[in-house]
Structure formats: structure tokens, C-alpha cells
Length: 240
Image (cartoon, rainbow, N blue to C red; front, top):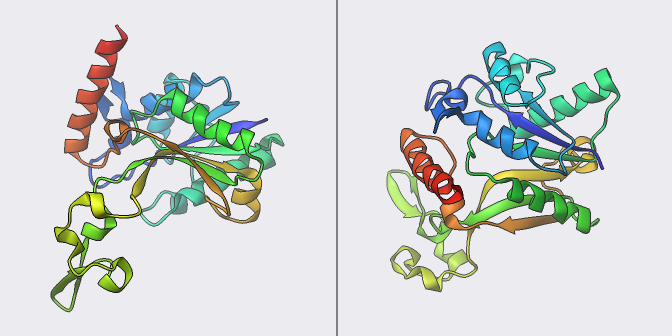
């Protein structure tokens, strides 16, 4: 099967300027997931979708194909992951007559993503023809029952007690929260038909690969960089 990995790395990050090429343990951030995908025996191609020639140069250094520059309208704050994935697949179809069977969303903000995780998400689709997508997940840092919203200057439970069945769920021990909550972490694998014909990133049936909470780091702040650095150094020391 043709399996396409797409690393989406726009240059306009506001939380941390040029976050996707900021160095982490001696490498640009995006290099970690590019190299993880390149090590997979299942991934046919790894391409970089970016709006920056400078980012293209970095991507090439670590093995990603840099075939095009992403249009500006797909690199702003409101563009979705699905938008740039569809653009990448469409470009390959029109310019190379190459169509993937499975498309991988590979975010550069997930430097702890392992090749094993990428392969696990792919294998879930290979082994289950009825599955339309798969995702890597980990236990959520906060259960939704503990979250709040503000309405008319009043703090209210984000999920009302009519739904939870609890008067004050935020004060309860997490062991009482059913069902357990999970957060999407890094890799998404989606079938061609689901993405390109239905314009969906999930589809009707989603499988999952469950990660340990310690592997769940999504880089958004400087504190996330510090945590990722600590965990990556632990991994590298263990591997030596």
C-alpha cells in the first residue's frame, strides 16, 4: 500500500516564534518526527507542507521531500489540518499522478512520537478494513468533568450536571469519573477515501493506539519545550 506521511509546519506560530524549527536537544523541532517517520518500513514517502523556503531547507536536511510551498490561505491561524493534507494529496495527484492509500498527519509539535507509534496506527488500518482512521491517544491531563466555562460573568461546570449526574463533579475523586477521558496526541492515519471523498479526518470508525501519559507532550509553550527536553534526554540516556 502507498502510505504518505505529511509533516505540517507553517512558519507563523504566535505562541513561540518559528516554533517548528526551534532547536530541541540539538535538532530543529520538526526533525524529530521527520526522522521517526523516515525510519518506518511502512511509510512510502514523507513530505513537508510549509509556507517557508527556510523551513523547506531544514526539512530536506532531515530527509523530507519539499515539493511545493503551501498557499498562504492554508498557512494562517484558521486553516485546519485537513486543509493542508488535502492540498498535499491533490498536488501529488495532479503533478506526479501518485495517489496514497493512507495519509498520516505528522505534527512537528510531537517530538516524542516514536516510529513504533506511527507503525501501530498504520497497522490498525491494515488489519481492519472497516476502520476509516486511527489515532494515538493518551489519558487526558484533565477529565472534562473538572472543566469550567464562563457565562454572563458566572463560572459554571463545562458539562452540566444534567449530563454528568453529579451536583459537583469537580470536587469528586477522579476514580468516579466514567467513562475515562483520552486526548489525541500525535499521529493520525486516515484512509484516502475518508479524507479526499468525504472531507473527513476521522470518518465512521476510528481505531486507537494507547500511549502512556509520559509520552504525551504537545509543544505549545516554552514549558512544553523544557518538559520535552527532559524526556528526550532520558530516552537518549536509556538508549546508550
